[in-house]
Image (tube, rainbow, N blue to C red; front, side):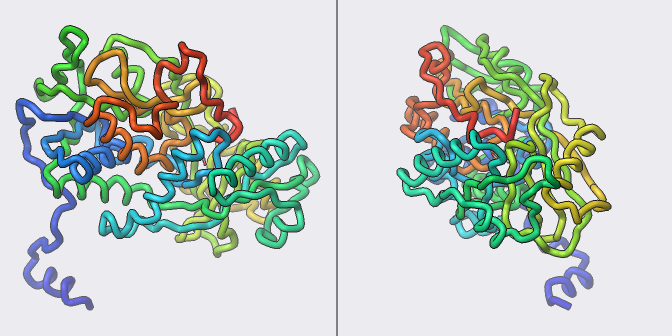
Length: 413
Ligand code: PYC
């Protein structure tokens, strides 16, 4: 028996430090208030302290940390996007992810698996070639593989898909990875808290106080806090918060459902995505299949998951891996995906001075956690967009400068 466990058994004393400690009450004012205690909000708090020395920061979370989309995704990390803007942004995120376990002194179980986007049509193959060329131009490992190459790497995959929609080829992205989502939130949270950031859970934002176009504070269900910088990082709650700020964005909320199976013997060490079949699947280190489909077609503020979803997903899964028939689904859930018209995020300055937005994460938010935190911290401190996020500015919708990422961001719509 490990000595620490024995000591705990004898003394009964809790000998593990808490992950983070925060004073009970809110202070009257902060230099920066972050709305949303998910991965993005906690990462931003961490980089505010680490890169800019800003420590008088409060993170306000209406539920518990990491309980929103951070804990409701399928943990895929990749940078094989279609637009130069997307590729550069997510490449920086992958680089940050790789060092995160040592940076945060917490094992985030970062596991590089290789990522296949299967193409079932000539049109999908053309998009794969296009993505591969853009990726290679920016130094990202991506290439188009033919059926024989795929069969060698993933022999379990039925490339004929039961005769329904045969695979013609795939975009293969070697750096594609998975990571443990909870650990990201908790690691960033602990890192930020160790440097002075306060994390207030069960604290709901009820209103924003704005004076002469400048943010001056936040109304919460625990009282008012004064601040001249507020960063909203709330995914599915974005429309609620922007309404308080007095403006609208083109974001629409769609549920994104996912599930895991019972654990089975390891057979899949890569990540398989089919935007044609609208399914993605990887196998966790515990042996569970982690799976999802495209967003639900109707807008809805809901985190309920449905039987229809599992039924549809099972149909497609069996096209790819017929031998898993009989596998039991043990858990299913939904996140709230804040979808933009061009499938790129919405980040940076807003019409309200001192109020910054990190939103539009649709189905692609988890993989952006580190880079969003880092670039939003920079943006708020300097009151101008970080170079990497400038293309994702809100005004692109009125300037007709869209970042058309549909071919690579979405898993089908
Ligand atoms: O963007 O890789 C992705 C993804 C997978 C599942 C949802 N989004």
